[in-house]
Image 1 (tube, rainbow, N blue to C red):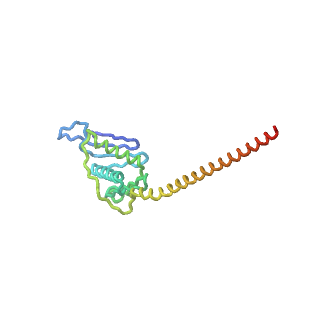
Image 2: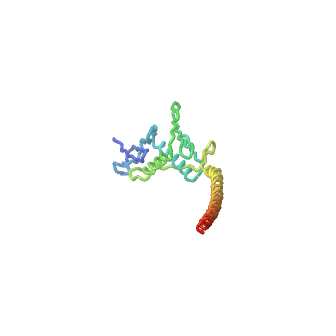
Image 3: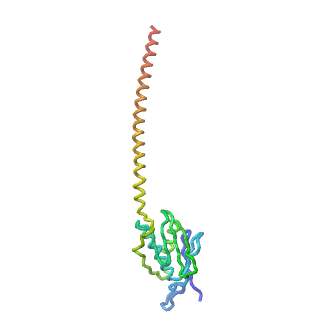
Length: 209
């Protein structure tokens, strides 16, 4: 029996779902209720694939991690299958662990745009009428060791803003002094010029007389 295949694409990411309809529930032949395999392809990265249990855990991991980022919480997710943590504000490190002892963990680094594309593909999957919804439960409690907290943005702002404000204040004060200095110079030049004009006029008048 041939399996059905559904594709969900978003820019740099493609999610493929393979499976069969539930004929006992009189589903249409192009439906997928029994997922047998899935593949997550990211440009220039190894393909991630597995069974329905792996997909559920992967989706749970990405949604939980993204939720932490959106709520400015600790950017770290850890589980038996996958770890995701932020390397900085722009890169995210994914560690995929195999249940087989001889298979080394797979490490992938992605940027914000790829992370958004992955979530978009999962959203397409969840909203598709051709596949049964996949239930998962995003975690609320996470480990806090060796983490990268996005609340550091406020700390960085506190460090960066004062020097910038000081420079701006210094610039404004300097500009004010320069303005008044130039204004005083202009007045002195005008007075000197007027004195010179008066002197020249007197000399000219003396010659005429």
